[in-house]
Every structure is written in C-alpha cells, then in structure tokens.
Amino acid sequence: MSYKVETVLKNVATKCGEGPHWEDSTQTLLFVDLDNGKIFRYNPVTGTNDMIQLNGYVGFVVPRSKGGLVVGLDRTFSALDWNTKTVTKLAEVDPGKSNNRMNDGKCDPKGRLWAGTMSKSLEDDQGNLYCLDTDGSVTKKVERTCISNGLAWSVDNTTMYFVDTTPRKVYAYNYDINTGNISNKRVAVDFNKVPEFKGHVPSPDGMTVDTDDNIWVACLGGGCMAKFDSRTGAALQRVSLPNATQITSAAWGGRNLDELYVTSLRKEIPDSELLTTNSLAGSLFRVTGLGVKGLPAYVYQG
Figure 1 (cartoon, rainbow, N blue to C red):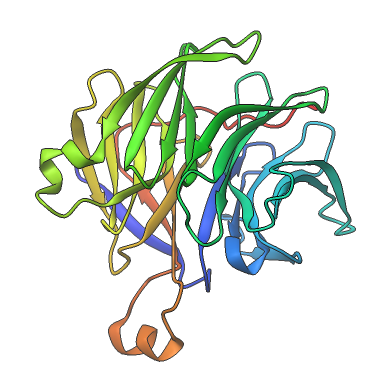
Figure 2: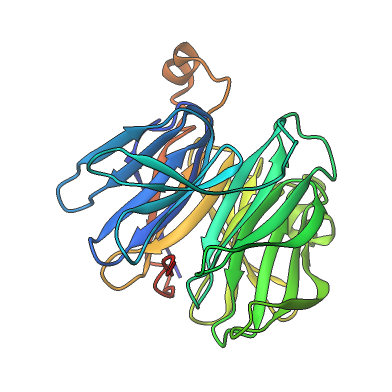
C-alpha cells in the first residue's frame, strides 16, 4: 500500500525532536525539543504550534487527567500548568546521579507513567526504568539500562515493549495491568539481526503500536520508521522519511488515529548546512495512507 509523507513543521526542533503524544481531547500533538527544554503543542487544523520553554532537559510530555501535563524534566517527574507555566516537582529519580537525565516516557493502560533515564554522556548501564504510579509512588522497574527509550503495550494489555537503544534491542515483558508488574524479559526485535538492514544497522528509538499488534520503531540513523511483527520479530514494512536520517519517535494521531506523526533529530547541524542541503533534520512529519491505525494514547491518572 502506498503512503504519503508530509513535512508538517520544517526544522522545528533545533536539537532533538522527541516524545510525540496525540491528545485526543484537544486534537493536538504534544512533542518536545529535548535538549532545549521546549514543549510544543501543534494544532493541525489551525496550523499553529505553541511553545513553552523550560529550564533543563525535557525527555517527554503527557497530559494529566486532573488537568495540565506531566513532563520528564532533568531527573524528575514534574507537573506543568500550560497556562501559568508553573512547574511542580512530583518525584525525583536516580539520586546522586547528576550526569543522568530523563529520556522517553509514556503512560500504560491504567494511567501509570513509565519513564527511563540515561547518562548525558552516553555511558552504558547508568540508566533505569521507573514507574510513577497513580498514587504518586515511584518504583524502579528495570535496572542498568543504557539508553532507556521507546515504550508500548500490546492491544490485549498483556505485554509491554521497551527499547534500550545501545544494544539495539526491543524487549518484551509479561505485563500485569492490575499491578503494573513486569516479568519474563525477552527480545522481541534484535536490530542487529534484521536482514533488511543489510549491514547498516540503525538504532531503535521511540516506538508505538498499531491495532494489529504490530510495533513501529523509529530508526535513528536509518531515516525511517520500521514496522515489525511483535510476535515473531519479522520486519514487515519500512517508511522512509525524506532528508532526515535521525528519526526519533512516532505517535498515531488525527481523528481516526490513522496518521503517524514522526519526530527527528537535528543536533549539530548548522543553519548553513540546512540551507545548502535542504535537510529536514529536526522536522515533524505526518505519514498517511498506511492502511492501519493506532490506539488512543493513555494519560496520567494520578
């Protein structure tokens, strides 16, 4: 099936576009420019793209059921009031690890917020994966990760998927929706063993799932989104993004959740190079005509 790629916001992230989240209630897309501490809200109907500037790294942004947003600011889960721009710390993680920061984060089907950390200098085994429960308590779920990244849950809510970028693997865990417990870690997709990558192995980054239970993984260094069978790990489709090799994450959006919004990274590419090469690094893309759709994104219920 043919698909169409649109450049929605050209070079919008000057560092690292990340963490897209479709807010169904407002029909807008939230996403971040991670290293710059910027949070965006894009309205596809009006074409407006509002922004809030925070002081620090912002790994993710998700809506909160009681109002406002929750962001991964430096090493904290923090509440953000969009209108007043007030930031309130909810919990801090990785105590004593000043060189760490939050990376990707997402809510599970019960409204718990999961987020992982990583070393700012990309040292291995320094990160962890945490869960902020709806009662405000924080639990460390996975220890000694390298670059904690994409998260997704299966349609039947029995499996959680989690990306660790450095080993280039997507892991699967048995997931108990009632308790939030995970167990039985195994490899769902090993990027090092995907024949379709033919010697040039990209790094898995952000991730989402469709209603057919296939997982879509952003290929950092690969210029594409890759669709995999979550049960067998087989590669099913590649969606190429134009003039942007560093693809970071994706989220389903639109009224029917059949539009795939894709973020990308621009770090260390000067404006002069963007002009001379027509690079779309840091752009926000929208892919339509894929013939599949996603599930509504979960919000934090605490």
